[in-house]
Length: 273
Ligand code: C2E
Ligand code: MG
Ligand code: MG
Ligand code: MG
Image (cartoon, rainbow, N blue to C red; front, side):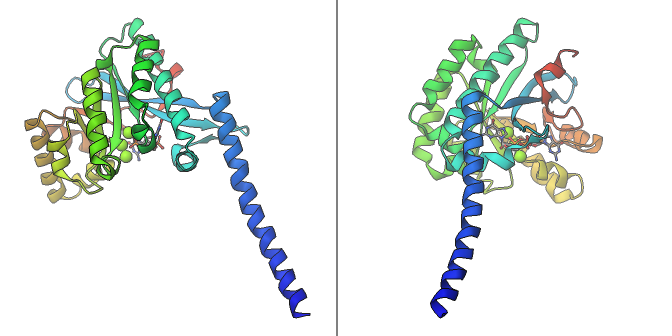
């Protein structure tokens, strides 16, 4: 009888497990199909020169439209794409599309815009990553100076030697590299000096904190002046208020990005600009 009960419990447990496993498999298949069938969409968010208020570039943000009309944000599927290595072909598609779109805008007259593309650790560390970048530039005809690749600190810290090699190869191509979400991770200042980043993006939590806490304002001001001395440009991300914009400007930050200037939107939304 005990065995039967145990068996019953085991059976129940298996059903619960297989429901979760089936759900995961289902999501994996949906993601794989979307990667193969190009079921993703790219949104673009403006980056603005804080003095002139002119758009000087756009950051590409990945979106996954669903059959029910909703749109999934990267936080909901990028981790799965990373686990399953689908991020590599997906990231390559993003790179190609982003370069092609910016080149289209350039031919329409936006000659001063750059495009920033987020790159995952697995893409960055893939042996043919630099080739992917070259291909995307060649196929689109986009000048390499117009492409900025955004990486995070943890990506660089985990394998510094490989990271340095990739940075050097990209620099040889004249592609810029930006250190994304700076300030909330290790905020390892020696990364800035030892690795040749061209840009630093202040994490939006720092931008928010500097408006409410003088100590953070001091921290941001000195980070910006340090970056400037190292020849690194600074973008403030997550700018939502005029107060934040003014503070950033006063601290010497040249470029801002955030809801104050524009929400991420499909390329078609930029037609009227
Ligand atoms: P991120 O690179 O730091 O991108 C900025 C995120 O902040 C975006 O979220 C954007 O929609 C949001 N944001 C912009 N302005 C504001 C603001 O004023 N206030 C607030 N609260 N948020 C703002 P999103 O689109 O959900 O993307 C989240 C993250 O997903 C990105 O963070 C990036 O790390 C990653 N991601 C996005 N697209 C790609 C991609 O194509 N490839 C890879 N590997 N990662 C991507
Ligand atoms: Mg980014
Ligand atoms: Mg960021
Ligand atoms: Mg961020």
